[in-house]
Length: 320
Image 1 (tube, helix red, strand yellow):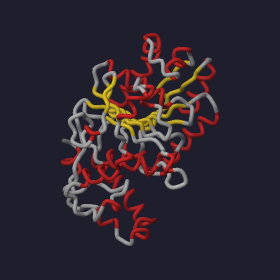
Image 2 (cartoon, one colour):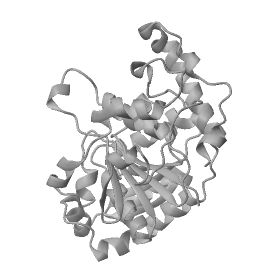
Image 3 (tube, helix red, strand yellow):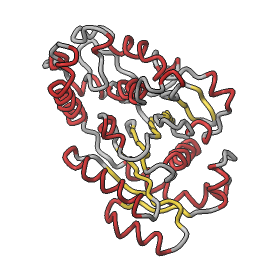
Image 4 (cartoon, helix red, strand yellow):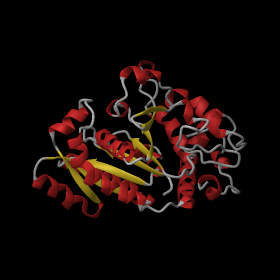
């Protein structure tokens, strides 16, 4: 199995961080190597994974050190004129440094905290000084740049807790994953996010699946299943054990057992997904051209299409 990238998304409060945590623990218990990335403006993933407040203070975050991230990944890539021109859509080119999701990576090793068998990285929280100055995409840019340049590593899983709703489509981060799991509650409002994802992602062929959460009755499950059809992977019950996890009390053996069938289903789905590095790279290039034409060229008075390397070999770079 090559390395796989999976994102958990959903309406705010749907339980996407909880599901990302459960899946990360599930993989760790099965001896898999996991890089867990918190890319949500509400930074709860680390806490749910059992990282203490004091430990969180020791972690260097990608979003707060975007200059260092850009400099390392740019490497000897001469097509990027300067750091300000290294955007979240900038594709890899000759001379770019690849990133691998493990503790030995020269870049990520500076940002990883290992806890309970899981390697954790954070995009970083929104700070007081950011209020009224920048949007959170200024932080997630660093994470997106890393994902753009993340190369193959055997038996590695990258689990990302994303921002809420359809915010992923306001940047290109939705293109970075082998599987996107949308967490849906049995409500019309939650299902509307599914419809948004289906509509926005259709032309890109994203691999979108659905897990129901906070299920209390058979009618709840049927409501979700009937509305998402083949995208349905299973549902999780609304239990006191689940509530305990959300309170930061950890995963009980009971919770691990009752959620295992859904975790099995998610893992089977992502493990059976076929890698296509050519499509991945072509999607990056297409989005970069779109950004260049719509605003980058005018804003920076330069031609951002020149960052695209016509001699670049995606499979040689990514499939290591």
